[in-house]
Image (tube, rainbow, N blue to C red; front, side, top):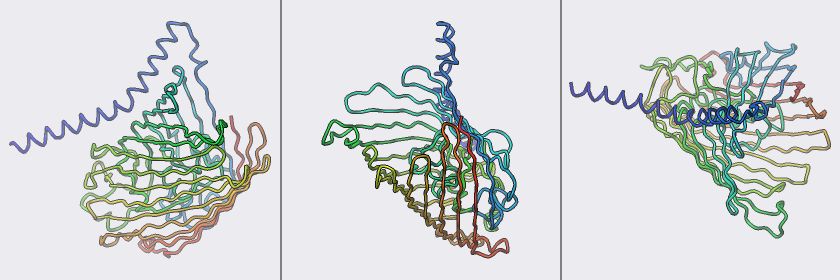
Length: 438
């Protein structure tokens, strides 16, 4: 009887914790919205003057040779496969809506729609942002809600798009798939005096610290699908298909055939922290440490919690005012079921880009691995892969960007044997894009 009461109390505590987490994330956004509407009503102020929007529509043609896409439960690493060859594609409709609450305070919403592969609109970011007045040399920023950690060197364009190409690097494709902050983040930036008063010569230091939840499954899709190169971003409520390996499908609590990346399973918060140095139009270097602190034995509604942690390094250097050298490196581990699935992962890329007037040409080379460290039968997650990407873009002011891109990927995955396929696979993709910005 006592055990039953203890379990009931534990369930009540778990339910309460989940409610507190949800309200802690949503309440600031709702409070700021209510406050803005209230003041607008009192002062007769038109709320539409506080709202701004921007976005893009991306139309494509492509030719692909290789395995079927992972989004169709295949073993390919691209978003589109040969079934999309030769016909016009509405690759992405993306929009960002900002509502200014008051000076330094705003609510940001970002949405993506992928009509070729999914129905409906996916909310990829939704957060309240506050920038207090500068005190001395220190500037700060707070974000509360759903958002990306600002660790990507490549994805600095609007709506977290890449400024260098269409398909993201493997690192940023993984971030787009299953990693998001759902919580609160503090950012501090201060300037270190340089040789002159010119801001271009001042050295800037930054610190980011965040506490988050709803990211317990992070690591599952990397372990069971592997690294990819694409430009699809997961949103709230996203359900991604993947092919569970035989060893996992036979487990006492089998993983559902659809993966939901943004779930709270164990009611334990995770955290990340970073430190960076930069000098305007010269260089940027940053290091991140991430740990979702998941209890890797937790399981709920077909979804496992994965303990995932990593170190991430990012660098961006201007060789000349119009020539950029950039790269990212990540190394970490992820586990589920206390070693039932245990993998190390590592990926690195280096890119170079040159812009001449409205023209930009970029090239990226990368290598990615997953190393299986467990002894679970029929669950071999070992993977090695290399990819190369070259992109040419032409900017037709003020609204158009035209791109041509070639991407080559070569990978070896042991899991393909379970489906009667060769472990080694070649993937080649040629893409043409016409993107309209509004």
